[in-house]
Length: 299
Image (cartoon, rainbow, N blue to C red; front, top):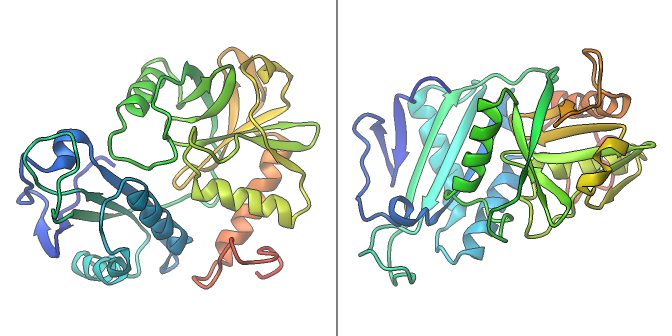
């Protein structure tokens, strides 16, 4: 995003972004003590918005930040109304911190959370046709990558290394096993089997990751939530990334290993992109990938 949004939602008020201020003692500023979420609206609905808000609530609970996420739907409507984006394709950013308190490492008692949100126009391509180059990095981050926290310095450092060396993304390996990207989930394909790291504390369980696994189940595509070793990368047939804005992006090259010589993704990646597009084009807010017995047949 090249420009700042004109308005933000801050603690119940719509404020010009140039005028929005928080205390220097906000724990989000001092410690990165906060949780965030990003979701995208198209065709008048947030794509699996309930799942994003459920993940936000879950992460807040993991770090003991008290905040009533049931209020967010009303706040979001207020923000979109104030910015004229009610029916427009847009990206929504939500951030909740523990709030303002004297600087002390232990959690303060009885603080009011700080809520900040903004929305900006955003257009997703129907299919992400990029074939991207990625580079590996040792996973030097902490052991709770499942928490979508605002303190992202490890991810930022890795992504900056990737960008400055001509790559789209950095993908991590920990104890000899591939985990995830700096802002995406990582998949491999071998002999028609889809592989991705299990949803544990070493990765953020992406909403798009879960949707792709649901698509695999519904389409009888075999998959395993099993980490691929760093040494096994050259033996893989395909690799791809997933994420809210990334959608499904085929990997052309990982370090020096080339997966795709041409301009098209691998056959499995392309099939999943087609099924994901079908889901997007027929999405309605009542869809729930956790409860649906067959999401694709429900379209």
